[in-house]
Image 1: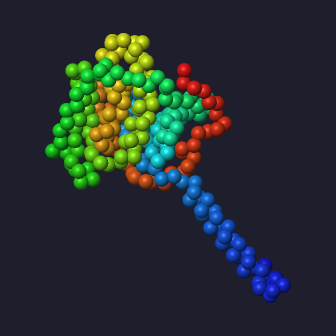
Image 2: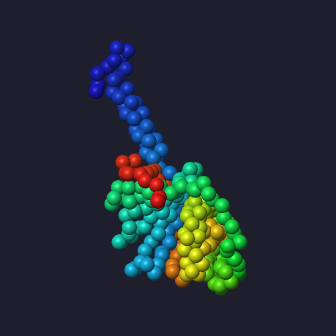
Image 3: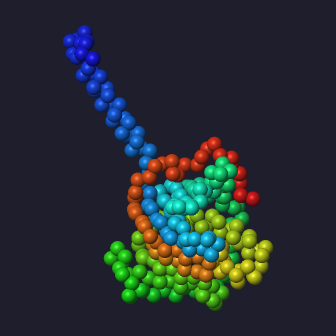
Length: 245
């Protein structure tokens, strides 16, 4: 290491300089492998789940990831490509990816849904980021359907991404109603809203809670512009891809 070059300069100085360049490149590479994304975690009580679970949502400018965290959580997860409007349902157990994209026939008759929203400030609730939460009660076909509590103007990137993903699924929901008839609509009014006014609950601001007859969601954690490993948002290319039937 202490041999000198023909110019008389110690070779070890060149080695140290090269090592520094390598370290800078490695640090830059590590930094390039992270993505800034908003984080939301909801505690979910669902009538089809034996115990409550935590639903995690991560949203970047280009992608959304939805999965479960904690003990007993499902291994599968969803990716939503916001640019291509593609939902990827990824199942590690079967090593498969079901692709759900927008359908060419995406027409909808909003007259099929009678929707009324009653909004009021929650005066007794604590302030959230200095703002007063609001309750919004959704009435469908003249009957109470579900309620949300939200705060205006917060986490717009995450709320927009959730609206976008819901709109991709809306036409498939409408096909279910066209084949199942009015009885199904009466049994699941939230499904009817998702079909004909997709994502409207996310237009009221940052959703803190959602309460309907089948599922309750409660926000337990959120962070803005947190750095995540880019692998979280990448489709496993070795998995088998197939379109949703």
